[in-house]
Image (cartoon, rainbow, N blue to C red; front, top):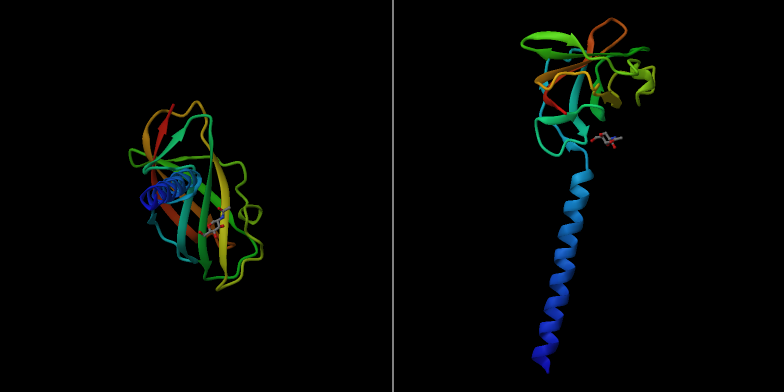
Length: 162
Ligand SMILES: *[C@@H]1O[C@H](CO)[C@@H](O)[C@H](O)[C@H]1NC(C)=O
């Protein structure tokens, strides 16, 4: 009797545990992943993290026709009343323009004017056009301050897929 009770209890505990693990895994899929990036000369700021969503494995696979959200956290070293994003896709060493819908950083999660010492979350969307080729490339993302210096410059590899 006691044995059966213990067994039942054990099974119930196991169900709860597996349920929890499954739930955490499901949640993990939708969580923004911290992306490995290279700093390419952030002189007016310091990057503390980069998230791309969705990007369950790296390099991020960008599906044509889909849009991705990019979240860059940085600390500014300068005061600036403007911020402008410039994005390139580097293909075989050649930087090609990678147009984004809203190049104005002050309309991408950043409250301007930017003040020195403050932390900001820059949030933008990266639409992947269906006419892009299926290639691996490096995305170089700059956010320039009022003097055209980089608040951040980051590079991360991506793979464009159908
Ligand atoms: C962007 O990243 C920062 C730092 O990881 C986080 O606090 C913030 O919630 C993120 N924003 C979005 C919209 O994911």
